[in-house]
Length: 352
Length: 195
Image (cartoon, helix red, strand yellow):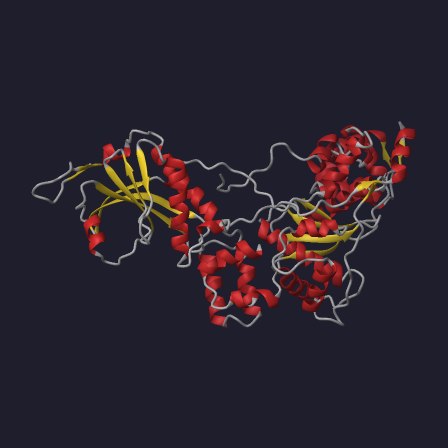
């Protein structure tokens, strides 16, 4: 019997597993042309091929009958101008769309905290001014933000730490079809970078989601927002004078930002000469601190997504198998994605 | 290794590294290493009880003295707190060795007292417990015992940095306030009907 699946879901499924058409068609033992036509919606597939598809791509058969997620994945945040292979990019984007659909399937039963994240137009106010207003509206007291994830989740943002399949993308922000505002952070990044990325993505949500903006400036604006949001000039300026390596460690512990961000902040506030800034960069690179710095910050653990699942399991009496069916995932993948691991992924740290 | 005393009438036996490295309490050096790392954690977590107006090194040294006293005091190790403002807290191990605690680089300020200590002119062998932090004060890099024969000659080093296996762990930032999340009013009814 021939079956009409949603061709867009077939593409999403294939890309999320990092497979090309040619790779998948070989595994399915069908021609690439046939697969290509199926992906364009020009050809139906039979039940046997559907079963093979589900097996090869590790999605349940009903996955391929879902409606297509319509909202685009917006605002990727790359630390540097980097090239990511098309395949990895497609894998990341498709996985995020599927993840976002999973979340939407669970949103019918739960009420998130009221969404109180404001929006401001960066053509009217400077990003720094917007950051100060945002801190005020979100009732953030003076000084360092102790747990940024917690502050944002209390204000209705859903934060998800997940693998983005590369070490070049720091995070991305998106709105789901059902209106959930979600920020994804790359779990491969160290905690100081995750915090900065979170503030950066928040900047996008506040300044660029509702208001069309000059695409060349958006990343710079989000960076300026993040810097002022995490390290307000009025409060940090004095402690950044006469900066040295010895002082950087203390400032990192206090402000909960990376040493590199502190040095950059000092430069942006005119407290470091270009040569001094260069010397810091050279030293960072000599000490292998480009990817990871000393003094790891405590991890900010998102709460809401975990709680959404808990409420379904306890208050609504769902089983994990039922929830996996609701979100259209195989049970194993559902558990990996949504059920808190008893044995956490370990990081090396000295602790007593 | 035995180090001969440069004295005509030695008041103590030669320093014997094997004897030093095998104290009566077999866990002693492990406890010392643990104390240094613990002290660094205490110091890093802004524990104000170690606050000292002079310098970070002194604050860390105060934390080290506190942790060693807490973790290592026993009948084989007597901790003697500094009686003056010199921060010369010390400990006596097995009634044979005087241990002094210092962050490296050890000060080169020359005093009569320092000379007496480093020329080993006291009636017990003096061994310096030194600990080194990295440039960013982010971690303890090295913990070792050093024996000076003269102020300029370190004739013996015993590195105890790796005596402890620190566990891999995740540290979480506590939540200041739990976000409010609940089940929608009609969700339970819908679920009951579906069941």
